[in-house]
Each structure stands twice: as C-alpha cells, then as structure tokens.
Image 1 (cartoon, rainbow, N blue to C red):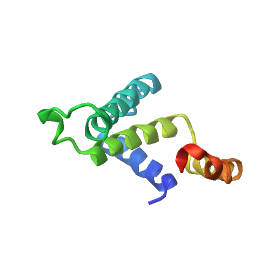
Image 2: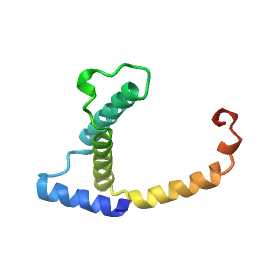
Image 3: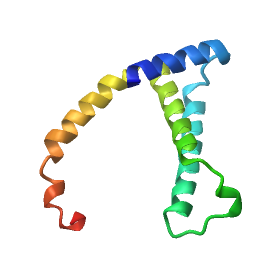
Image 4: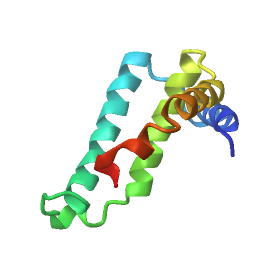
Length: 108
C-alpha cells in the first residue's frame, strides 16, 4: 500500500469507526505520546537501559503503526499529500546526500 492509499484507508476508518478526527492539537499530543512509547522500547531493548518485565511484551511494530496512524490523521486533516511530500523529500535527500554519507569517517 502506498502512502496515498494509506491516507484514504485512515480517512475511511475515521468516517466509519470514529465519530470525527480529533483536533490537530489533540492529534499532535497523541503523536508525541506514541513516539514516546517507541522511544521507551528502543531505549530499553536496544539502548543501555534495562528493560522492565512489563515492557518485554511491548510490540515495536505495533507502536510504530500507532505513530503512522496518527501521522496519517494529521496529514489528512491538514490537507497534506504525504505521498507527494515524501517523494519530494526523498528526491531532495538523494541529491543532497548522495556522496555526503560515504565520506563520513564516523560511518566506516
């Protein structure tokens, strides 16, 4: 599924299962909360913090999907074509960073 279709699927879900979109500020707060949950898993599972027993059952994929869902909601409600924006950003990064990272001694 491409991003454009994902935006449509989320919009249909909101119309079918949700009453309406939460306002943009609420969704921004939710996005921050979901990113925090991803950060918690990464810090404990891949970082130096010890993982609590209650965190071991957390599914990173599920938490990343929560981030994506809220991000798609924000794109929909602000009229952002996330597919076009992503394609543009990837093109810009490709042109700008094509050689830059290969010359970074820290990455070798």
